[in-house]
Image 1 (spheres, rainbow, N blue to C red):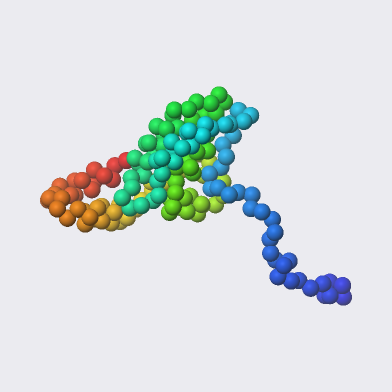
Image 2 (spheres, helix red, strand yellow; image 1 turned 90 degrees about the horizontal axis):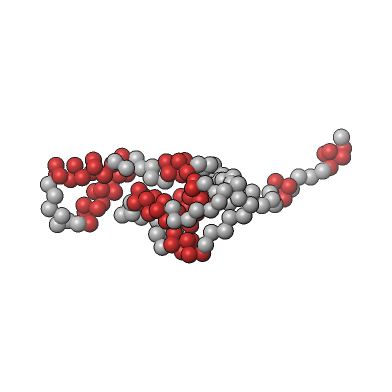
Length: 157
């Protein structure tokens, strides 16, 4: 009993020196291929369409372009979903990249989960973004009913 009492616990005992296992929130998909090598030109093409999470950027348009780029490559034993999951982080920068890293490691396991979280925007956020766009173009000339129709049409994916 005296030995237990003599053993001191220091702050170092509470610190963790292990390296985190997961650095990305998108889980690595299981594939049949032994080794996946993406062409450097594909990565450059994806990075030419960076999404930064700015108010004037359209997440649906970004996803459409990203999928279009990903569809240019086929790898034996690698499903399209696996290609998209592996490459999606290369299409983000700035605030959008920080958003991606804000999720728990390996928490997104399917492409549907990534898409669902990526363009997820509350109605009030969408309305504020729309109003901001109208403020940036004060001479747009759209009447309020037309603005309302434009906003409602913009809510549809």
